[in-house]
Amino acid sequence: MELIEHLNWRYATKKFDPVKKIPPEALEQLKDVIQLSASSYGLQWYKVLIIENQRIKEELFSYANQHQILDCSHLFVICNYTSFTNDDVDGFITRLADTLQVSRSTVVEYGDFIKNELTGKSPAERTSWLKSQTYIALANLIAGAAELKIDACPMEGFQAGKFNEILGLNEQGLNACVIAAIGYRHSDDPASARKKFRRPKEELFVQI
Ligand SMILES: Cc1cc2nc3c(=O)[nH]c(=O)nc-3n(C[C@H](O)[C@H](O)[C@H](O)COP(=O)(O)O)c2cc1C
Image (cartoon, rainbow, N blue to C red; front, side):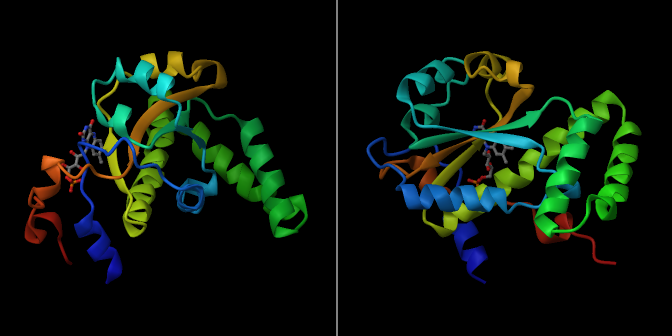
């Protein structure tokens, strides 16, 4: 299975080659894998900032202290929306009907179902649900990058509040949930030689 080979090839890259940049076609493919990611109800209620600008990366680095931010080719900031309203569901349902080329009335029940499900969640549950969606995009991004022999480092070690300020996310109702530095490993990244360390299958799985 090629995916397993790709997953064995990849590792959380600690040192990127700052000279090597991702070509535009590969960047488009990485956008494709995120766009095609599964999401709860198909809502994809998140946004991804792709940062190449070195000055902005330097500013963000002050609030993460992870060198990958400076050396990577592109920094993906995967942001969850901080709220989700019935109007947003209506907009989604309209787009869905247009895409499937069906009348709005045939999918409106689906919209009502989503609204019911969401109103049943507490604010904390809703936030947790909104954030959890971004990790599916993150996982596909990392696996997709590996297939293209592009390196990645997913990171949660950053000050989201500061990232939100610097990137103007608060005003857009967004929150920097998780980030991924993308680029090419440096030839002397010590982490590249580290053995894969994983929980044994007998601990990880229960087959019933
Ligand atoms: C959600 C998430 C957050 C992570 N945060 C960081 C981080 O802040 N800094 C870092 O260097 N690695 C980070 N990692 C990388 C993990 O430490 C790494 O994936 C794990 O140790 C397994 O190693 P491997 O990915 O090299 O196989 C993160 C990984 C995930 C999935």
